[in-house]
Amino acid sequence: MPLHESKGDSVAGPTSAPDLALCPFHDDRSHAQAGGRKTLVLTGASRGIGHATGKLFSEAGWRVISCSRQPFDSRCPWESGVNNHVQVELSDHRALPGAIAEIKKRLNGEPLHALINNAGISPKASDGGRLNSLTTSIGTWMSVFHVNLVAPILLSQGLFEELKVASGSIVNVTSIVGTRVHPFAGTAYATSKAALACLTREMAHDYAPFGIRVNAIAPGEIKTDILSPETEAKLAPIIPLHRVGTPDEVAKVIFFLCSSAASYVTGAEVPINGGQHV
Ligand SMILES: NC(=O)c1ccc[n+]([C@@H]2O[C@H](COP(=O)([O-])OP(=O)(O)OC[C@H]3O[C@@H](n4cnc5c(N)ncnc54)[C@H](OP(=O)(O)O)[C@@H]3O)[C@@H](O)[C@H]2O)c1
Picture 1 (cartoon, helix red, strand yellow):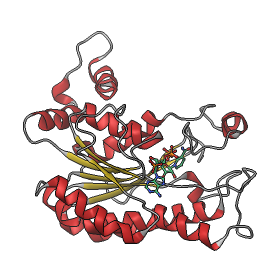
Picture 2 (tube, helix red, strand yellow):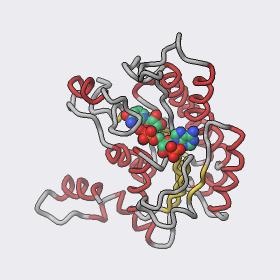
Picture 3 (cartoon, helix red, strand yellow):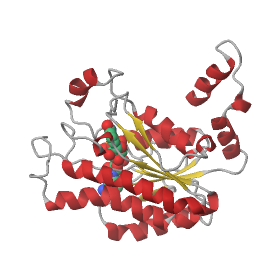
Picture 4 (tube, helix red, strand yellow):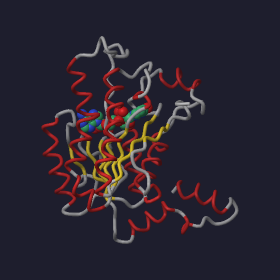
């Protein structure tokens, strides 16, 4: 597991065997493997950042309950995927109560250790251009806000009791565009992500008395289907690390936030952008 390797190197030096007892990620994995298996609900698990996140948690011994519009794809590398998959259209808030009931059925009274609100949409104009505050239709505003903001609110509320029992944590996936105008991402997307960042702060406050931590991660440019084709060539030169990121680099930060290593972290929004925010 890459997280072990880096911790081992920094603690014990490259020539010594890594001291796994010192590694908080290892503690989480041994707990998961010792009968107290942890469970994660993950939206947008079918592709990109969500897929990498499901893979990482699954490798660490977690049970992954995935949600997306598509049926489960048997090529996904986590066990009993079909039984742990809930098909849902997150742009339709009326579909949420049914999906939450399905998730609870699959949990079968077991606690929920993490909810990752990762699914998101970033519509473009038909020619691929940016939809700005003059050109975005009401339908686009509504669908973007429903998937990117309302669904995280309803899922978090609906799974509150299961998260409370586990002293679990929620991670909302925001974006660097919540704080600046972007050449490709549209206005509805940007404002939905700014609202999700604000929601994270509000939820961290409201859920803390119940032992539930709520954080956000704000990716910059990560190589997935959501990126416009020109993004990498146009933006890599001005990113301090001179490259776009990979989905697994985002998944590792989400994993950290859901682990006991982050037990005193709540209400944070962690940038994952190669230094673009500086
Ligand atoms: N990639 C980046 O550079 C970047 C940067 C900043 C923030 N983000 C954020 O990171 C998150 C993941 O992005 P990504 O790049 O991995 O995107 P992606 O590759 O386009 O994947 C999006 C995921 O969301 C699901 N989804 C989309 N619409 C849905 C709906 N109406 N109902 C249910 N599920 C839906 C998709 O599943 P189905 O198609 O199967 O439904 C898919 O699994 C998003 O919130 C995005 O805004 C990404």
